[in-house]
Image 1 (cartoon, rainbow, N blue to C red):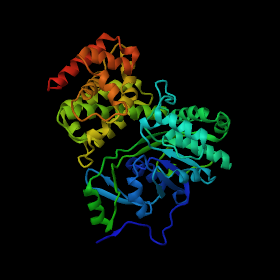
Image 2 (spheres, rainbow, N blue to C red; image 1 turned 120 degrees about the horizontal axis):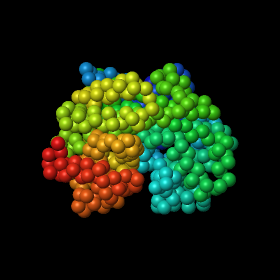
Image 3 (cartoon, one colour; image 1 turned 180 degrees about the vertical axis):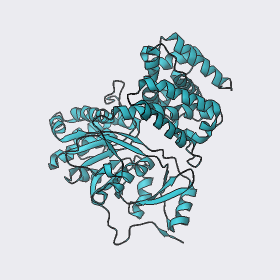
Image 4 (tube, rainbow, N blue to C red; image 1 turned 60 degrees about the vertical axis):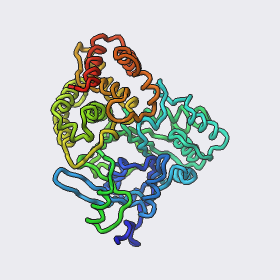
Length: 459
C-alpha cells in the first residue's frame, strides 16, 4: 500500500501571507498553482477555507495541504504536486479566519465562491433582504468576533478584526467570473460594513484595496481514476487530486499596498484595466460554455467535447463568437487567437468536462454572458443567433429539458419560464433585460428556437 501524500520533514510549508475563501478545484488548479510558480512563491503560503462543506479540508489536512495537479493534454497527462497551500480549514473555523486577518503578514485575501456567493440584490449591491445576510448583520452588531456564514459577512468580520488589531493595509482579490469583480466585492463589503458599523467605512477606504481579476482555466470534476493515475505514476495516495487543461490565464489590476507574490513570473498579466480581457472571456469562453451546457444535453450530449463535435452546436458556437466581436474592445488578432485556442480546448477529448456542472446558476451567468451581445446586436439592427439559441436553450432547461436545474434562484426562474411559449419568453427576457422585453423580432426568434428544442429536433 502506497503512503499518503504529505510534506517531508525537510519540506516546510511557505509562511501564510494569503487567506483564501473557497477551497475548490478551480482555486487549486489556478491561483494556488500560479502562487507556487511565482518567482518568490516560497515566501507566499496560502491558508484556504472551504465553502459550507468541509470535505476538501478533511481530505487535504492529512496531506499538509499538498495535492497533485493533473494537466490533461490531448496527447497525455502531466502531474505536479502543488505546495503553496500551507493550511486548510473548514468554513466553520471562524476563529482561525479572524486570526489570519489580524496578522499584518497576511497581505492578500482571494476568493473563489462563484457569482452567487456575493449575495447581490437586483441593484448590484448587497441583498439586504437575504435571510443569511440579515443574520450576519445581527450577529456582528452583537459580537464582532462571533461566527458568520456568508462571504460578505466573513470579509467584513475579517476587516473588523484587522482594524482592531491594527493589522494595516490589505488587498481583497476576487477570482470569480464577474465583470468588475473587485468593484462588486467592494460594494457588497461596504454595504454590509455600513449596516454593522458606519465607522468602519473610512478605515476600509484608507486600508483596503479591492483589486480585480480575470481568471481562465477549465477544471472539470474528477473521478476515482484520477487518484488511481496519481498512485500509479507517483507512488503516493492522494485523496484530493485536481484535473485541469494545459491552457491557463490570469489578468490582474490592483494596487496591492501590502505586497503580493511576483505572479508575473508565472505568466500573470498585470494591467490597469481588466475589463477588456474579462469581457473577451465572458462572451467567448463562458458564453459558449453556457450555450453548450443548455443546448448540448437537449441534443443528447454529456460533455463539452461531445457537444463541440456536434456540427450544429459547433456552428451555433461559431455564430455566437461572430456576434460577440462587436462587443469586444481587444484587437481582432487577439480575438482570432483566442477563438482558435478555444476550439482546441473544447475539442480536448481527455477533459470530459460535464455540461451539467457548467449549467448551474444560469440566472447569474446569462446576464453577463449573453445579454451584452443581445443589446449590442439588437441596437445595431442585427439578430444575434448564437445568443438567441443560448436563451432559448436556457428557457427549455428551466422547463425541464436537458440536465436538472441547479440554480441559486431556481424556483423563481422556473415560475417565470412556465406557461405558453410566447409568455414564457417575454417574461424571461423581461427579467434578463427589461429594455429587450418589447423587441418583437428577438422574442419571435427565441420562441421559434424554443419550440424547435421542445419538439425534439433542436436543429
